[in-house]
Image (cartoon, rainbow, N blue to C red; front, side, top):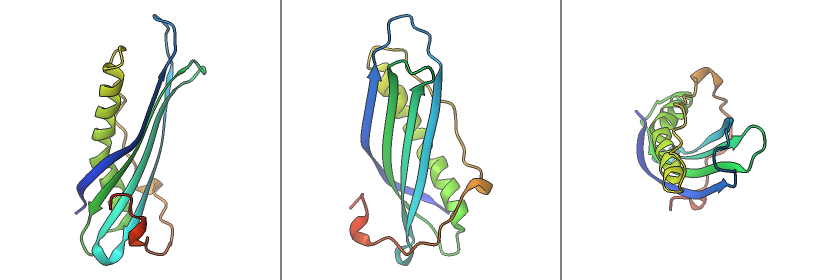
Length: 136
């Protein structure tokens, strides 16, 4: 069982230089990576979520987050990856909605996003060193 222990927003950027009344066509992009601390049964996830205007109008928002999760012995890494994303995603969704709504534009509510287990690529990498944990 994967459990969110804490998270932080490491970067939030928002640009809104479009003319009032402009119609926007938005595109969402994200990357999500998980680094494991096997001996401690915990991992650190990094989520980079961007919303950009498809026709290159000056409108974008980007949130970079880091989160600490714990998991149990025997948990499959692909399951940890998908479950951790599912737990973290509502927070990025709320952050984007809040940041846009307090900036004088209608609050942007990004669509729900899920990662399919079959799309998860697990790399054989050595365990992440403790001093590299962004949440220490």
